[in-house]
Amino acid sequence: MLSSMTYNLKQGFMQIFRNRGMSLASIFSITAMLLILGLFFVITVNVNLFTEAVKQDYDQIEVFLLDETTQEQTMKIMAQVKAMDGVTDVTYRTEAEALEIMKERWGESGYLLDSLGENPLPSSILITVDTLEQAGAIADFVGSFEGVEDIQYYQETVEKLTEVTDFLQMAALVIMGFLVVVSVVVVSNTVKLTVFARAKEIEIMKYIGATNWFIRGPFLAEGILIGLMASLVSTAVISAVYGKIVSTIGSQVLAIVSCPLIPVSYLAGNMTVIFLALGMSIGAWGSIVSMRRFLDT
Image 1 (cartoon, rainbow, N blue to C red):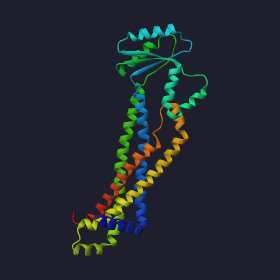
Image 2: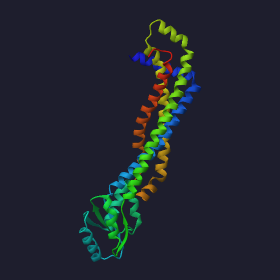
Image 3: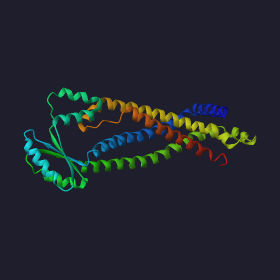
Image 4: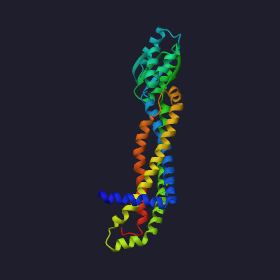
């Protein structure tokens, strides 16, 4: 078993070297497909992360109060809101509590907020509602009180983000399907060159009783190796580019949306597994397709 695998891998490397022009074209084709897929992957997972972060607060309305709002006004607002239908809880959040929550969301970068000096965050009232559909009417009612500076809730944001995520996932599937077909065709043509070059050798092997899978082995290894190389190249490129983006603008994104970007290590680890499986599958399938005309299936 081990000797057979060694033989197939050795022959696969030799065939890639002999047809290095077409092999490079195959590697480039699969790499291009995986890079495009990787772009959608990076965007989708980060949008999903932001959507989930927003969803954690989707059942809450946050009412920001003016600095000059008195404790009496605050208690009056809370009492009237608590009596409304659809409201399950009303809590008060101080400026200090808001700052601590912001630090927690920023994670390792939370120390940056210590340099602010004076706390710029306002106090607020958090209103928990039964359903997001009731948030609009409750927000309109609260907005009529004196002492209210701004009101924030996330119904439209969640809906739009969900639509964007669904669109990106569908677009990625359609584009990936098209590019997979192209990649399989390119790999198939690459392996066919080797098959034509070894046509007489294949006939002799069949004549002396070699099985189809023994003959197919080196060509299958060739396709898998092509897919493996393309997967490693595309993973390295995307990881390097994404790592540069995170190190350059990651803290700015965190400050703007209070949500971090997906860590490079997490993204690279998952992407490596996905790309290896996809790239090697494309290479193997391209080899199988190229051999169907020469071997009995």
